[in-house]
Length: 217
Image 1 (cartoon, rainbow, N blue to C red):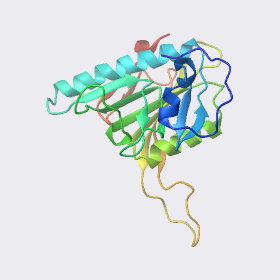
Image 2: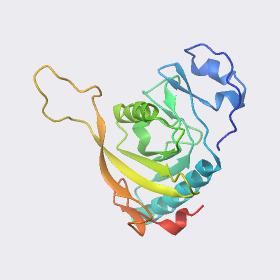
Image 3: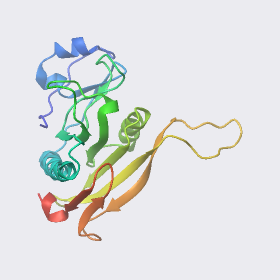
């Protein structure tokens, strides 16, 4: 759940997960660790929470429908849950607004990036392009197959656009001596707005069909 922002205390540039756990929850809940570096997460308005909840509920419904047609597949959908990078350790993580992942081996397990099928971010005018490019690059580097960006309308409590991206682990031909800044990247595969579509519909990572009224504020 989104927490109200509080004044940021003077913290070191780098911390471990163990040090983060010793902070008050209202402070620790506003921090991600990027390879141990403290990154403060901007908390958006009430619309962020509302649309995060509605998207999570809609994706949960779609996941249940996908599993009903394939009992061997087990999927989970959650919101604002830490995703840890690497096979061990917890000092490198991000907290997407919503995510879909394979069922884990037991309760109360950490979610690793290798478990995740889809991550999504709900954007507002407070998000900078640099912020989102850096976070998106971390998702891509970790090999998460699908990334969603949800843009909120500026003049109304509504979703303006949903964009879906698929992971591209290879890059096109470049001039000799030129190398991409990021080894993996996302390619835009879908774009929906309430003005030009009746629903969000995509087949991956599982069949997703969400009518716009299901996401009303």
